[in-house]
Image 1 (cartoon, one colour):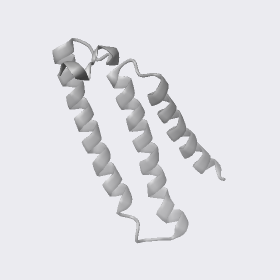
Image 2 (cartoon, helix red, strand yellow):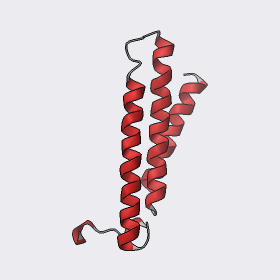
Image 3 (cartoon, rainbow, N blue to C red):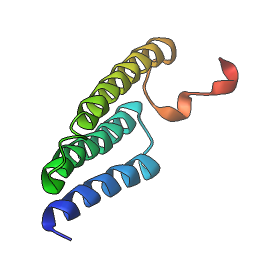
Image 4 (cartoon, rainbow, N blue to C red):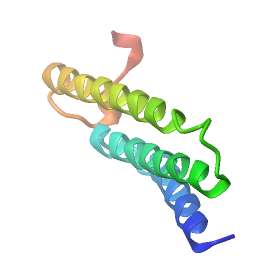
Length: 98
């Protein structure tokens, strides 16, 4: 395993651990999700170059599109919860009260 692969795997693992253990604010959860998407995008961009495959070069573009949609939806949820609940702390959110 090269150091490049190790850095991508560790970035994804640390972002998922941050998402699992530090869920106090919605902003921190969104940043962890963006870190996961960024590591997946970079690894999908480098994978066809390493394998000399031209057929899978569209996958990073699709991944980037879904990542942008996820970021926009997350920011819309952040604005909506801040307006209705007054803060972005996740312990204030209760799905049963919606």
